[in-house]
Amino acid sequence: MAIVLVVIDFKQSYFLLVVASVFIIFISRVIVVYLPKFLIPKVFSFNNPEAKLLVRGGLRGGLSIALALS
Image: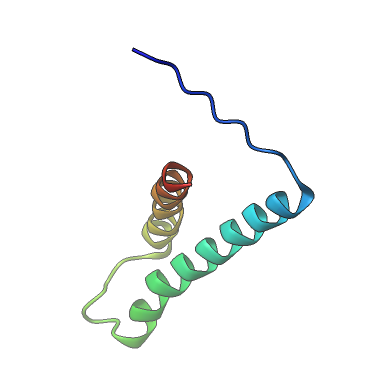
């Protein structure tokens, strides 16, 4: 049984990369949820509160996977 400690040097560029990644993920979620809603409204019939929930809910899972893979 062993304990592994990973030390990562904190640099300003890492912080900017994280902020940019969160922004890109959020914008892509907005596009993925709202684009089909506007292009095919008969097939995707959900209202704005449901769409907001889909956008915010997907962001949480994407960040968890990104942190686990890093």
